[in-house]
Length: 263
Image (tube, rainbow, N blue to C red; front, side, top):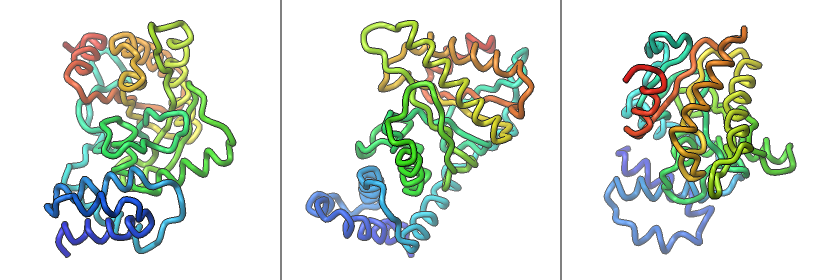
């Protein structure tokens, strides 16, 4: 089966569940790149509900092949920042990292991003992990019975990601200017993720830049809070051995290098 055939089989199954998108899908060109973008869009739009085992097997095959094509980065090979025991910095796509857990900057619904192919980290992680992740989050939220407050953490399997788990945390939304509550909630996100990871005996956690995208927390101040909170946590005796600050943009890389004394 060609890659296009793989994609089209998955698209057909999703469109059978969501026929309201058939006219839109019919207008998408038949080139592999465009049909793959359609598949990601349909996956983003699909609400949490039961998953057919045949669909899951086909989805997992595609996502695992794509994972290997992107290239897996083993976190055990990332060196600690000199003078910063337990801390590492890596610039790249967090969905490539093989570690115990990657951190997802979620929204309060905790179901992933429903905006097709949106550029947020929430969308990237859910799209690479597969539809099982949304269902797992939906089960957690159904048990909880209310939206997820800022500054806490939830743990799920990572499914088709190279990481073992995903830590989901909701960061503060900055409205006009940063408040003390915003700062406290952001620090709480880092502490909650690390504490939950330690509770499960995990050793290596990779953080994205929580709240600095759609939630508008100033990048430099967010990075300072992240480094200070992680530094303080690593002073405690827990299972956590390595914390990776994962950055994607050059500006974030420069900011963290300056804070960590590497640039």
